Image 1 (cartoon, rainbow, N blue to C red):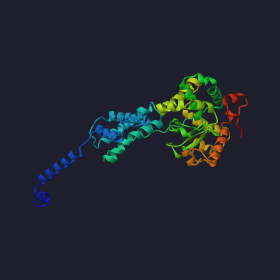
Image 2 (image 1 turned 60 degrees about the vertical axis):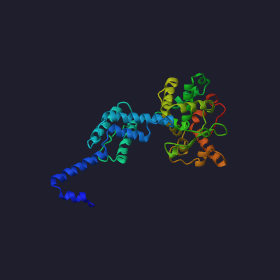
Image 3 (image 1 turned 135 degrees about the horizontal axis):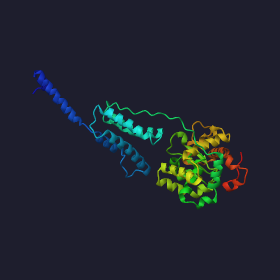
Image 4 (image 1 turned 135 degrees about the vertical axis):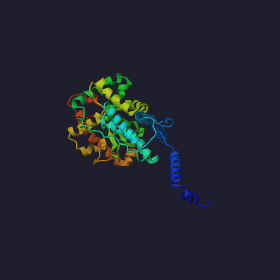
Length: 361
């Protein structure tokens, strides 16, 4: 027939037949869209993101993916395996609210926020990749709690801690506690995190030479976190146990490593502190020893420092006169920050810090 014959034919159909024809076309269009269930779409998203993939994926990533999967599956169990319709947005929003209320009973605000962000990744994917743009899903708001006071180690607690950590008694303990003691000694000198030490290549761990130090490079939370941390306390302990520590970090998650530090404080030292408290303790020592905050920035990884190691020094290691001068300056700053430990008036300084002398200034 002629081109456009169907259109011409439509003009000859009765109103009733035209309505039927258009209804059939609409039905065919809906069939072609393949109405999908929540579970089918979720599985497609999981496959696209590789959350269930384990082969060729590092263990830290696998563990993190398992956490995301658990959150996604929890929402799926609340929503049910129903076809996605315009009303699905209301059901999903209700499930998210219930999830928030459920989690508020057991975890902190920051954790819930992070979990909801992971879950919302699926809904953003639905909008962008599957064109479900009219679901109108509401991510529940979170009440921002009043900030808790930062826990730090007082100077008295630091004295007692290092009296023990750097005594011969530490060698009599199990490897678990030797690892804990070494992590504490490293963390307190620059607010280091387990993830930063775990990713640290061996050539960034410089424990020999005039200025022992660690270089935090690679993947960090912010650019400012790339930094150089002088080692002025417990060098012998760190040297003795650094391989043990690195092997442990390679075989476990960062959250487990953080728990080990918390457990070390509780079981061995007898106080309630965490790995994160050591970052606050570093800041406390800066202030208490009247060191300018800006001078400590390139050690702790805060923003706005005056003295900075060059990107080349951080990336390729310190060599050359100009790099040595930066490391020397940062080491002097670190000795000032920890002078209450290094310049004690009793004889403990000799026992605490063998082979390092008694720095001044």
